[in-house]
Image (cartoon, rainbow, N blue to C red):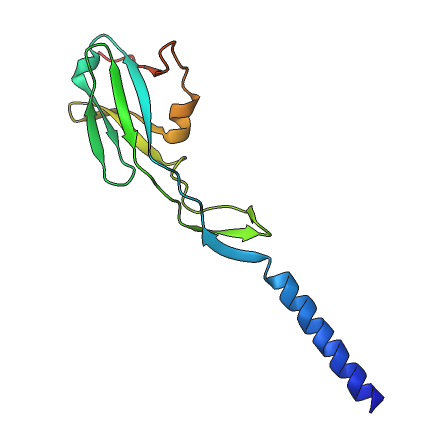
Length: 137
């Protein structure tokens, strides 16, 4: 009788331990990134011949002014589901910030592609514009 009771207690304890360890790893939606506006300055002899295409959400094209300035509206986005272990993000298959979603186009030719992370790494001028230098004929 005592051995049956001990076996039941051991089985229950083992079940609780396994259950408590397995709930730590879950898949969940990553937090949303809110819409933002980024300013880009393209430095090249004729910047007005360029357009900038942003392919986050619904793709949109922006004409570049003759001084090279363009304001980009980055829409809200959210990465897909990803694994978390005790609230810590492990990895993600989709990463919008690393994907090449910004294209600088001259006519039909894509001159340069950038990710959002690449954009944030560009130098910033005194007016707060990210500066992209292009050597284009």
